[in-house]
Length: 458
Image 1 (spheres, rainbow, N blue to C red):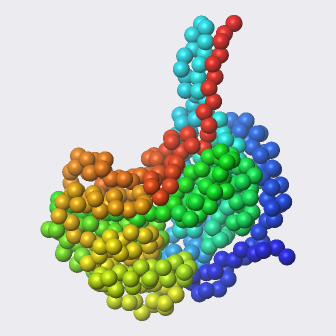
Image 2: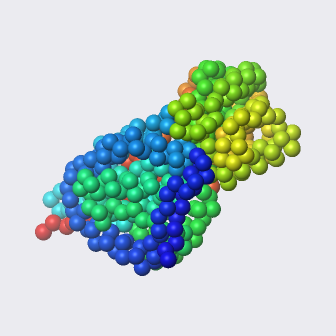
């Protein structure tokens, strides 16, 4: 009997969907079909590949009325936010628009004696292992440019969002992307690791936990398979004395709490200059107290359950430990907090970096706020982390933001915004957040390999 993957809905704890995993032999055969199909796919004109990918994106958009409640059932995001199609489409369209330039030959010389140039060549078969928190947007970051560049793609989605990969692939296949070129696979960890160890893939993009990233590296050890890894985060915000206070509070608290705090680049710690600290905390508490925690299928709900009880339990443990160490909680428990996946949001003060809640990834609706006296103190605290994905700086002085940004160990520096992915910029991290980079022209470089041509003319 086949092993089953089960999506346990955070809405009510029921089994929302189940799918059987592929055996090792079935998965290997599917990869071989992808490899055979990729050669013909890469020979198609770039314009044709772009057209088909954008048609697939549009087909997903046409399903959005079904997708939004389906996501609510799978991972708990309230339907009032309407799914992910805006960002999904924005990212795919940008990567389509820059493909011609990003994939063009780099001409070095072409004279009477020699032509020399560098071409970009598709890797072959790309494995995309996507997470549940933004299951469509995180997947399209790699799927769209990988297909456009001429790769075949195998998509393995998180069990918590079991139906996303299936729906994405069906939409793309229906508009003409060949079934063997873009495949969804239901795989367990053992089969995935075995495929990687057998050099089944030419490139792997993984978004998930630090431990998951380590498992990917261990499976790929000695295979020389390229890896792109986006792992944990503990993104900071820093509010300076010349900041627009209302904008800073509104944006940073939304960045900390949206999607129940389950955002790759969500704000997990905030440092506020002394002169604004008290007002910032007061305004932040007022915002969070007005949230409505509840069933994500209710249009009035602003904060849904976390995707799984075990994720909520980790946040509760971090908060409880911080309170034991002297932190102050500002939000009374919400009536809908059931001790399970439905978790009250929390703002903590009197926190320090000796507390797990300020050092370890929380990935939930909690944020600690600390008072700082100077840029130097804020920089030291922002860098006092094992992670480095984004940092959000709040000031009216662009040059000051750039100067501070140069001193922060992070992948992206925001000024007066946060929790946003700009597809024209490289999405990347450092330290335990991972390696590699997606989107932008650099994303195409990572999804292809350079091939040099040195042609001597007769």
